[in-house]
Length: 390
Image (cartoon, rainbow, N blue to C red; front, side, top):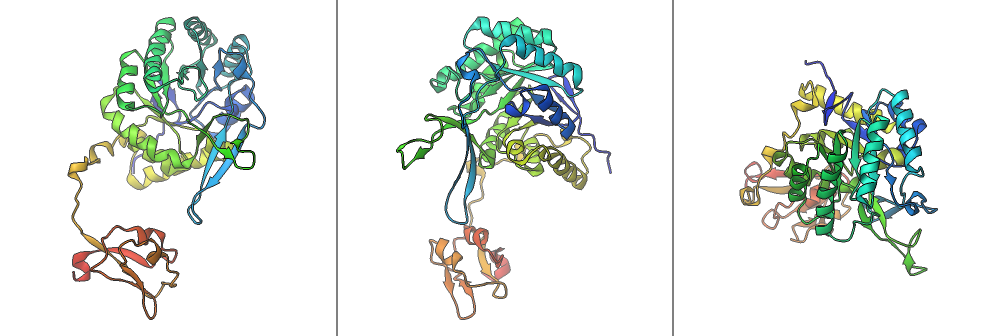
């Protein structure tokens, strides 16, 4: 079996592994960055510096957990209005310099500016402070550029070129997920000189307090994320990877090591995590790494590069999908508890109560597979039509 080496090159910066702690309150200071390094992170993105003074003060409270969905199928969203670093530019640069002196882990500086001079001044200050790389947070859910998809896409491209002309530090542009064509935006950002790309920033959303008939928490829009976002990130990472030559950082929806593996399989070079650490603590980082190692051991991979992007060539176009009716649901009477969930979700009327348990009327079953997914007793399996005598 090949020896496992999680070492990863991200924009020319060597990382011990592909786990990057994303920009948030958990990365604002040297002390918190040290916790990221002690937990085993390959790198960390410092909490973003904002040129606008106002957004250096976050309201309180600024976090809320939203639990919603049907009974038995509920999900959790981290709804937050955590804004910029409280530091001014000089203090922010000092903290970057302190972190670089104290830590072995690469430190990536992050910012959102509103003027060209602000971007230039920040990027040069970060270069002088010794930041290993820059993350251009042009797409922050609360940034002034969030005026429309076309404006955001153009601004991400313009700012990338501006920063690359101002400083000789690797820079990755962080994209908003709220774009009509993320692939085209990513290609434009690469063409403007970006060394890397981050997919994605948080979605912007709203929740409503029914009693007050007003927005919850601070009274406005907020960023929202959670494990539910993973499929969106996988979709666009996989679509973009074959069309870019620069590395991508995947951000959004990471909950365990399997999620990290999926993102690398779809083309990510590194995987950023934030909500998982905020809610689960720093012990999440070694769990993510252990999950990656476990997968690599089982598959015989020596490096993340061995399986990066492997899924992309296996994604079928819509016209290539096999649309034949190949399988039907079959219920095993022994574990069936006659709970009736299969009958409730079957729109075809194929699941019916029998004398001892539920059964599937084979001639009515479309093979959709939903009953198998909801069965709490694991009594339903999808079987090929040939194997059940059809």
